Image (cartoon, rainbow, N blue to C red; front, side, top):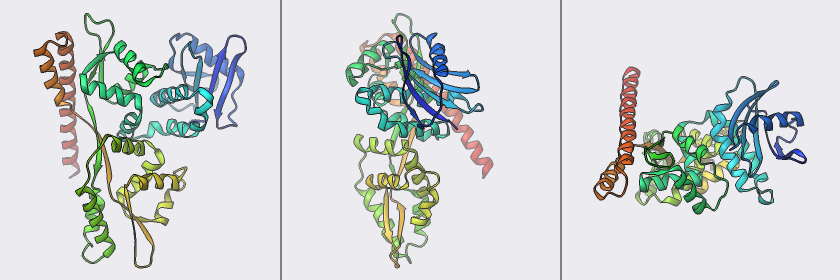
Length: 373
């Protein structure tokens, strides 16, 4: 488990200058900071590095020579720093975006919590983190529309679209590669590498089937169960997915506390005492409960004695899917000659590989399920 995080800057006249650290009592000497700075100095363009300095295991991100800020995570020796890379680079970008007037300081505790827990996240959480990130989401939107783009084109477009000057496009795209959403490769005749969409993200509300099935067993004899089933049916009768709702759902999934509460409610209907079993696992139980309540995920029903029970009214489903629509767009681009054939062929190769991988994964899952049965 990480010991803490420190944000510092470097100035040729004064050397290293600590901007903030979390927790506040984290003890890091100026000599250690200079050695972090020296290790990064070999990477002139900035980026993520892992390093061992004395007895310290460190994951660190350098924002580059224009801004000269360092975000460093102090780890225990048995941890793999590389598992924190995506969360660290996201945090560094968020810090730099909110550097003016030290706006990032209030965000630091939640940033640190996300970084600390990121290696334990399920795939659906990691997808939600990516989807909740404005920069990554608009990259995906662009690729859904166009299929592919060069890195240089994406970087210029991102700066214009977001108004942000600090954009480490390589780190952002590498995190999307790890999630299996894009592939990056060189195409002959193009000035920079091309980025190809190979999977899309699907996020929506879905009926909490496990809870519904359990509740239906005593629906006829239990008024509370009848009210719950009626509430679920009424909700989905009028439900329509919207981009605004997708953003709300992704932010809930990306929040560690809210996700833990959601997972408990996916398993059973609980009262307040049942919820408080999570109090040692979450930092702000009431805050998490308020978030999922405000998003309309839960239904609170009282029994005959007036005790409140928390029912999951809508679950959240987020997953990758194969973008068949892109194949039609590639064909159209070929017929209308709006994109170079070399780019279209390269994209088709990546889509083919993704399709083969997905089919292999499906067969493996079916085999495992058969063995379990």
